[in-house]
Length: 293
Image (cartoon, rainbow, N blue to C red):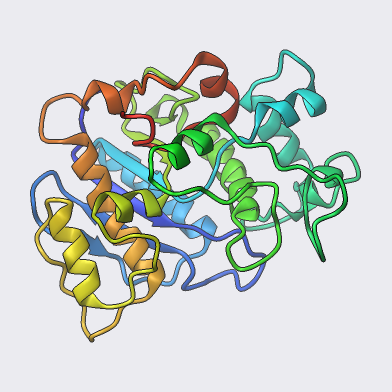
């Protein structure tokens, strides 16, 4: 995998409202030790997509890490789409269920009678309900990088499933708009000709690598301790405190740069993690950086 000229961390949201929200944050890092910069903008999901299209036109090769899953456990995928399915079947089903929803909102999918039984959307967990883990989620937890929330849990403050489904809609749209200029890793394993490579990330992984632990970063002192551990200069943000969304985006941008190193190519254990098999790559997706050891 060729290395990158820019590294982008995106903290994401799958909520329907507000459309423009502080819950989405975008940060950029360059391939040196300079601290990443948060955009400071108020984003919507569609604005993020428009920005990525504009960045692709500039031609600088960029790794985009976004805090959402682009697939889910293949055990469920096989039940829904049959034994020969891949990620495209899931993405197209999500899009088909949400054609009238703006801003990549994906509520039509988990509310659809064909798919609703696979999601926990209200109240206590239903009797007999299971949330199978993807290989990358298990690998992440066993490596000590933290245990990601299940994409099938759509309830509570920490749920990530709504954002993942919205991310699938955006990924499909970006592929239609940009074609080979964008690659969604690891579903597309050969990324060297792409200007933008987009992958799932898990910000807690970077916090764990930086020695911070599980807690959210809420002060500049905490942020810069993590930045230093990830080989970055200290960030400069006005005020003593920082939102956890901006912190996650900044740390993710620095973490992606840290993982990719300064060589002409990304280290092989990051670009081709040994635990990533063909079925996971074609169905479940993978958290960038997980499985390196």
